[in-house]
Image 1 (cartoon, one colour):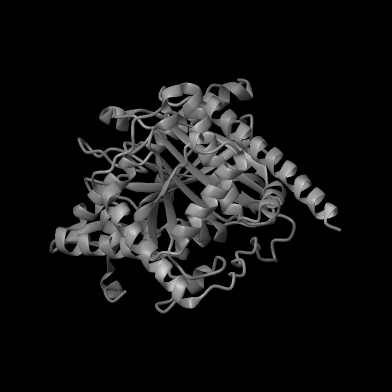
Image 2 (spheres, one colour):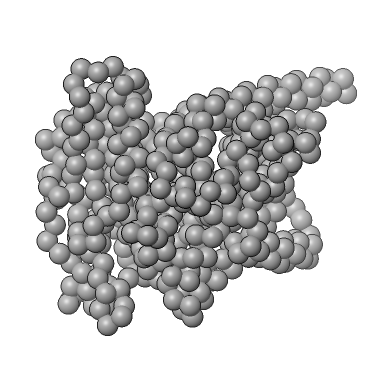
Length: 481
């Protein structure tokens, strides 16, 4: 912050490689309204609540003396709030299509670089899921999902009592089992070496096999996207978790992996044996829950504002490896546990910093872009509030987010400006005792409804198998009494 007296602040290394000719990433946060939208207070809310959250919301990225910096500018709020006009008196199903097309256009349209890198889109038409939708589009150079979710939540209040703070599900880790320190250290070292080697090879040369969820067509970056969502009871996931003695993330990841494999098999039987991996995006902060914006922006904050993320390659198990659905979940649990017992995620962050320092910002961008391109699925997740929220005293019935990309001139980008990297991205967020998964796919490449059906089938298969396994265990326990 040393240059703020001149109105300038250096752009962080991650900010550099999130916004250049190789890579450009943004986050879309979609708020589903319970009642028709009244946007009469939006400009006041933006001016008095949103802009003061962080100076970057009032800044543009410029280059000075060969280095990018944030420069404070006067913000014209009207330039950042978009309210599209659709035909009148259509059915909710028709507005679903208009909303989907509009969201695709927002996702693949580049931010103008002469204005602060955020927008709000107010879609007042009812869809099958909501009375209206408000879409926050925020460039990833402003901050990562943790920072931007914190900023968004600062604009929202508890619907039942605005004077009370929003609360979040507990993120306390499960108690570790007793394990020999030497054995644990040696295991962690082996896992780290293995993950680093495999991660580098995957990110450079190890592209996944072609499959119904992984195309080799390099021109797909310009293909429109479509989004479908799926909502699951968090209590249902917790019940499966307790019966299988795994984590909530294990259940959700296992369901995604199994659903992806079911879709691949249904679309093409020969894809049963293809090599597929997922790229899981992770937050590297050491914290249990969201901290306040005031705490995030402090120089010595333990949960600082900015981009503090890394990614991890996780192989997707093959259906042919197992005869039991639960074996699939336990295999996923074992893989993720092994990945957690590794320091490879911190190596990835360090490697990006080295590439950024010695090869330039675009070298780091190319590494991230290739890592995404070489995998089949990108998975990212965030925790949302327990209570119902409201924006300007209007209740929010649902919440989900997307990480998106668009192309810059003749370049291919990643999230917010191109989805060149892949045909399938999955984001997961909890809200009001439910978990919502958003599937972002390329139109005409992946069938979103069939994919969603396969995910639902995967959840049902896991749930039924967990019930059966629980009854068998109970019967065995009774026989020993």
